[in-house]
Image (cartoon, rainbow, N blue to C red):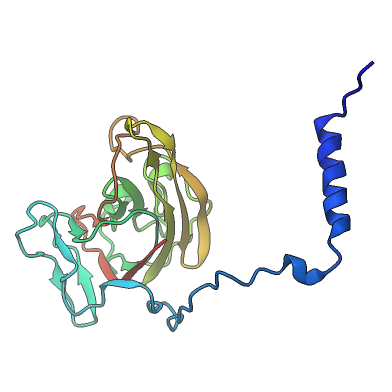
Length: 246
C-alpha cells in the first residue's frame, strides 16, 4: 500500500534539512540593496526626502477646491501658520499622492465657541475622500466616531489625546491607499495609522470607503489624488505640513 507523508510533516522535514545545510552565519546576510540615506529633521521638521507642502511662507503647494484658478483665501500668519478662511472653502494640494507618510500640526481656536461638532472642526482628507477628523475634543463630547482622530463616521480613535484649545497638536499619518483592479473592483482596502500628539490612536485601521456625512461608505475606483484640508467654518490653524511618498 502506497503511503503519503502529510504536507505539514513535509514542510517541517524540509525546514530541518535546509537549516542543517547552513553552517555559516554569513550565508544569511543580505548586503544589497542598501537602503538610501535620509537625514531626519529636528523635532517635527521635515526629513531630507520629504516634500514640504507648507512652511509658512506661501500657499504655493495649495489651490482652492472650488476653483483651482483662484488664489487660496485662507489667512497666512506671521507665526508661519495658516488659518482656515471661514466660508472660503476647502483647499487641496496641487500634487496627487497615494501611499504616504503625512505630518501636520493644527490648533483649535483658543477662545472656545460652541460644543460638539461645532468646536474647532476641520479635517484632513487623504486622496480627497478619506477624512481623519480634526476637532477640539478637549473636555468636549461628541459622537465617538466623529471625534478628533477618528476615521470620520467609521472608526473611533483608541484614546482621546487632545490638548487644550489654543495649543499646537500634531498628526503623523501613515497611509496605504486602496487598490482597484482593471475592472474598477476593490481588491484591497486602504489602511491608516494615526499618531496624535505622539500617541497611536489608529493602528493600521481599515478604511471602509469614503467618509460620508450621510449614508454608508462608497468604494469608487481612483488613482493618486490630493490631500485636502477642510473649511468647516471654524478658525482652525495649520503649520509645518510635509509628506513622504512610500
